[in-house]
Image (cartoon, rainbow, N blue to C red; front, side, top):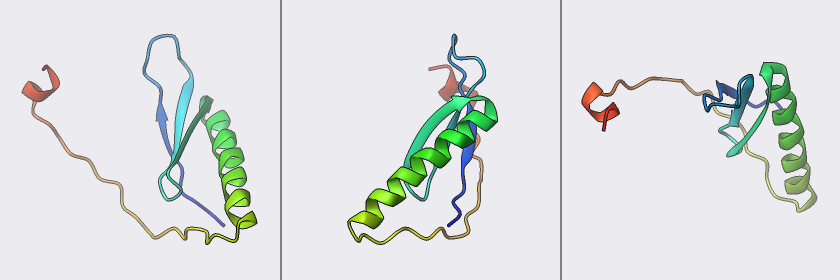
Length: 80
């Protein structure tokens, strides 16, 4: 199975080089050092999650093709 991973840099001070790894189809989020670390963490977490569901006979989610979009907010909202 193949699942999309959305990577996002952690922007909090003191966490330089870390990336969040979101797996939206599975509802999972993890993090790791750099892109490769985040992808490895996502793989490990997804592997455990899928194995647990399979061991209970639960169906595994199938990923549907999705789109990534953006929304733009007015500056007034951001400065509140």
